[in-house]
Length: 404
Image 1 (cartoon, rainbow, N blue to C red):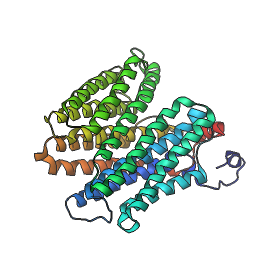
Image 2: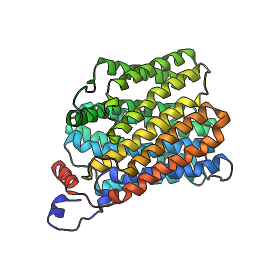
Image 3: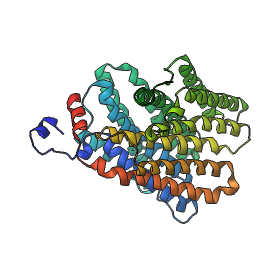
Image 4: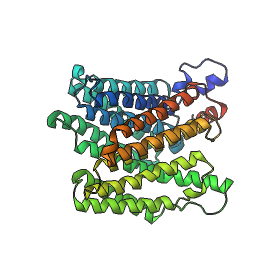
């Protein structure tokens, strides 16, 4: 959309929905996250069959790990790129092409008995490949090289997706590729959270509650991230090893200390900030549960669900709500409806973790987790759908005009 044409009263060629990456990807991603879980429980209990080459469990994991999350990553990256590079946002026909490619991937995977596993893999993995190519082009054109590390991490996610398709075809079920994808997401959350949570917290505290501020990024944070890589690589390769368990427990302790350095206890009044800290808390919990699982103290899946339903689920909704408000020119304030969305996704995470840790309670807890998850993500669609589909307010238009 040409902002000069808008200012002169000429009708834009494309709808506002395609004016910035967060609009289509956050909305469609949230709706898809709810739909996948709605379908998953009937499939899990044998009440519904899928037309995919994946086993039911693998389809569920793949579509959350390599379907939903890449959409949110794309929305985040396409929104952050103008701030990182000073270049115009990805919008209009290029953005539409990316959205359609993501949708094609979801259809190809779900209908892969018809398309064939190889065609499904090519279509599905093309989205992440194109996302990497587009973001790398933007970052390289601006010379802002420090942001290339995020793109490298997304490259590992693409490798995990390719491996998932290959592993399920040749081995019959995914294993290493699941842990690789989870490991990449956990590290990406730790990396991005370390940039945005202390910064947002510092800005709010300076303005609203002067006093103790979050610690600046320091050697401790770098050490935590490096040790996170070591622990996750061990978990991907040898998840049941006692060496892996010790590394995971230590990583969990480091992340808990890191979170404590961000003054999260001082932002209780701001729910948009508080939920970011709550979401990050599931990362150390996941490391601790995964470490305990390596010593056979709890079921091995507890850590993975803490990371994915808790860390990824809560933090993506936190980022989606905050970005959708801020980038459409609305006040950064959580309404009752937004607070209800946050409460629902936290309930989903806690119920799913407890279902994994206490299998005897799993049947009821799985239903609670699924219902709460669907309420949270469909709730995001209901609350933010009109915002994301609507015309940009002056603040968003001004941001895009400066980028152009």
